[in-house]
Image (cartoon, rainbow, N blue to C red; front, side):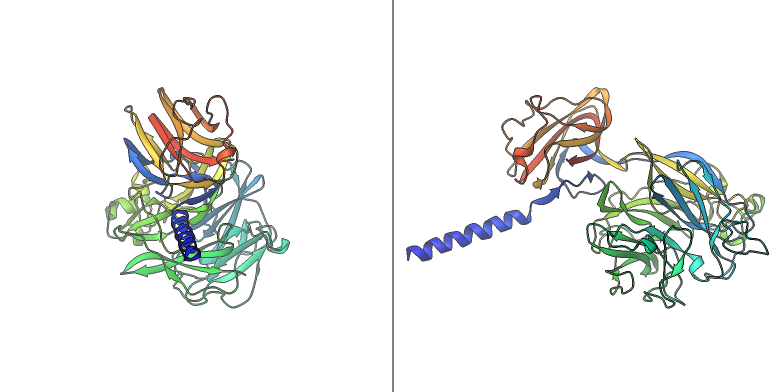
Length: 476
């Protein structure tokens, strides 16, 4: 009887511990951004606020005769010290996947000043002095979308991979050692279950240890997104339709989902939101600007969404992330389409790119800048607020934050046990008041930054803030 009682108590404790552990986030040493409520339990006097990129102006015009007014579906890749840009070149409006479409390439060493190298790969109209990396490959050149493969087992000859194609062929896989010279992985499409009439993006997921592809689908008549996965980039799973929670359906023309390089467990989607029935320009204004007549009706902007895998996007912020710029030329159909990926262009700055003035003679690439990790923040006004995280366990010995305060503001961070009780030595009284504006600041208590005694134990953070923003945090 005693043995049975002891066994019962053990099982109850075991079950209780498991139930508690299921509610504890394994943070490890991941950097966490505040683009969703993954880490947040309670907020009082604090809001999660989206921040807006700064318009830095045009950085590249698509004026070559093989580029033209219908350049779109861009991708930017940081490869070591070099930035690589890919985009569709097309000066003639035609059906998706027509023979006139080519894939063009530009490069930069700072992400700001771009050049179009003469590659000599493809003969166009009797000349090879162009920046074309793919031609005579319709319909792949309609929406060719490459990535730098982060899979540690990727072959050197396949450092870069790409997908492109339409419903006619399915998505055809390509590979390249240098991002310039490309070959088909196989002749037939590797994934055929979709319409693919937009940019279909793929990448190697470090957190899921597989390739992912987010592609165009339709939900109740709205342009939307589905997802498929692969271990080898050849064999892909049955697609799963992505959910957007309890948000209204909108036309998402491109999704541009990719892992944020400083927090690869978070996939950010800077999506092109399309309003097909909203007409800003009159027909006469369109003629004056040289807008193709098929594109006078409709307008687009960019929205910010995120996912951590699975079948759900988080659209915490429904407002526009990048609004169309000043001038009627920015208010035409399919303009303001975001380029895939964000890249770091200084120790404190990210760059994002948008293709503007679509279907016009001056179609170009526009750069926007944003603070490193600065997509969203925990924000407090002048009155002090508090934020409490969910319980989590971490690895490491110090807490790093990316933050800014006003001269009168401050941030103070307290460590709690999983039940919310302040931990001795890590209370608000022990914590150093943090004032300033830094990308990387190590938090301290009583003059010490060492939190290794708490590693592997369930804890919470209680964050006090006054006239301040907290953009990200990470245990090192």
